Amino acid sequence: MATLLTEKKAEDSLSVRRIMSLGLQHVLVMYAGTVTVPLILASVMGLNSTQTVTLVNACLLTSGLATLLQSIGVGRFGGRLPLIQGCSFIMLAPMALIGQQYGMATLFGSAIACGLFTLLVAPLFSRLIRFFPPLVTGCIITIIGISLMPAAAIWMGGGNPDAPDFASLPHLLLGAATLVITLFFYCKTRGIVRNFSILAGMLAGTLIAFIAGLTDFSAVGQAAWIGFTLPFAFGLPEFSAVPVLVSCLAMIIVMTETTGNVLLIDKLMGHPTTSQRLANTLRADGLSTMIGGCLNSFPYNAFSQNAGLLMLTRITSRSVLAAAGLILVLLGLFPMLGAIISAIPRPVLGGAAILMFGMTLAAGIQQLKEVSFSDDNTLLIVAVSVGVGVIPVAFPALFSTLPPSLKLIFDSGIFLGGFTAVLLNILLNSRKGEKDA
Image (cartoon, rainbow, N blue to C red; front, side, top):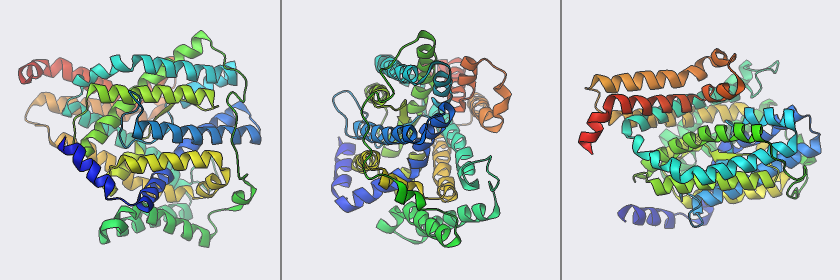
């Protein structure tokens, strides 16, 4: 009760302008990630520009609705946590495979089916929370932070590893300048200004890029003002056994990542993770994915990168994330706004991401700090689980020869490391756990 009252008091102290500004900051952090999924899928499927815009607008709109559902909550849907939702990168590979082999109608049908699967399995999956003590939680959060770092590196290099100017000196200097400016605002300021250090760093980085000719705002003038699309724009959904099975398997990995995010956010907010809260969060993931399939979008999950922003600002108000959801809805309805945000150079995002993703990594280390390492079993669990979780990040080609269904599992360091940590903790610490219970 004391925690809830503190949370309510913190929300009441924020002005509407500050809530909207902090919400915009969250949107800027996740924007590039959530529009990348529809852009890649549109390219794989050979869609024209009109169809691509339809996918992007649909993803932004549904991301906003999903974020509102998670932060506000409706009945048993939504964890009522400061989580922001976006198109899942974990689902990108299976969705692209399904789209290429079966078509867009089956792709959206598979999204609806795996969303229903998540909704139904959520109560059962949430009961596994007892297998996530601080030792396991710390390992998973650490792996999440490590897994995010390649995205920061790619953004800092320019966003496209195949581009001729990728990782050029101007890109690297721009990313470094953004990071330095952000650190300056965070370390040398206090109060409101410090809370907006990420936003200030990104704005300054974008200004530097504009002066240096490293960004292009021409797409803003070409964007439409209104871009609402009707449901099932690509035809009525179709359902096929194999695509549905593959997408449901991938959603198990998504649920594992969502569990890690809930554990991290609850840790930041200072209250324990309950089975009910986790089930409500997973139900919202499932419902959002079903809605996404109907609105020409794809499966959703909570974005891990925004946890780092919560740690930097130290503001875990659900009102801020609700504002972010509202902004995403507006971006989905008004492409002109989205075009302005998309003009932010990728190196600027990369510079800010190094700090935010590093904060997530630091949160995992901080969680492990609470665990006693006097026991050799603890050292063994951390060493093996984190080591296994880093393998797909350090050398993804290791599992390239596996069948697609197995490759889907082994490509996720979060799933591999988390599963290893849970399994080893059960095998090595089961007696100790029974004694503590």
